[in-house]
Length: 232
Image 1 (cartoon, helix red, strand yellow):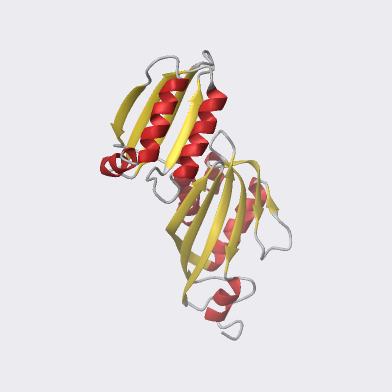
Image 2 (image 1 turned 90 degrees about the horizontal axis):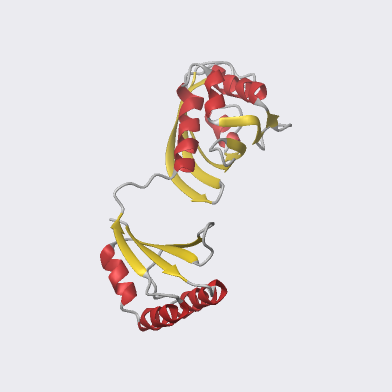
């Protein structure tokens, strides 16, 4: 179970505290077990600083606390604080990466949502879609719906999400697409062939949680080969 420690302190020496954290990261390279660290400063009290440190589990966090570098940095951190910091230990019982969820939701909607107008719930106005197989980028909801209808006209398809990585306002999704060719697609008459294609999709999000931009990469040539349109 993921474990999070919240360190709450008062200090007027934030710059020195940040430098101290940089030293800890450098000196424990290859040994530390923390996976993520966030430092926040209270907007209403600049001396109030909170650090949130994430570990894979409580036991892993305890191994990190036993490092001699961690003990030394802790003592130096106390010296920079106006008072003794407080520590809150939390077992994470729910963790939702909301941008990842939105990316998965969009893929599901592309395959199954009968009312394409509902894509507005996920895509921002003026959404910009980059697809290397298109001569021009797809921009706006009307163009997006036409692109989806082209694929739906040719295939009964579904996506399987294999991996997702999120950082900042970006989510990268590695997916597998499976479709049955049951309609016209790029001039190819339906063959009934079951096809498979893999690819990646990078989404950029607005701060309201809607997708502003998307970059696709997939093996269209391999797909056409499965349909017999090109030599495999």
